[in-house]
Length: 135
Image 1 (cartoon, rainbow, N blue to C red):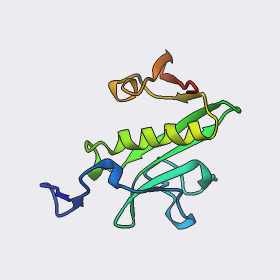
Image 2: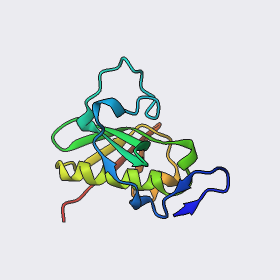
Image 3: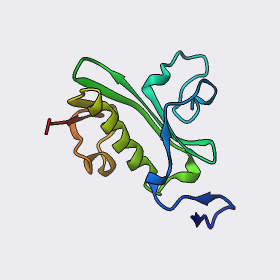
C-alpha cells in the first residue's frame, strides 16, 4: 500500500485493487454522482469502487436500446483522483455494457484525452461515442 503525502489516508497500489460492486441500498453514491437524494435510481445501473468499506468512485449507465447505452455519470472522490481510478471505472463500465450486449456507448462530456484514450470520438457538441465490435 502507498501512503498519501497529503493526509493519513492509505491508498491501494493499483486501481484494479479497488473492488467494484453494485451498491447496497444504504450506499448509493448520490453526492459522488451529482444526484439528488430524492431522485429515483436503479441500483442495477450503478457500480461503486470501495476502499475500507467506503465508496470512493462510482459510475451510472443507462440502456437506450438493445445495443446502445449511455454512461450518465462517472465520479471519483477528490482524495482518490489522479491515481488511475477514473480510468479503471471507465474501463469497468465499458466491460459491463459490452457484457450486456452493448455495441455503442455515448457520454455527454467535452472531448478530452481521458475519453479518447479508450476510443471515444466526438460526434457533436459535448457528445462522445464509442463503438464496440464483436470479436
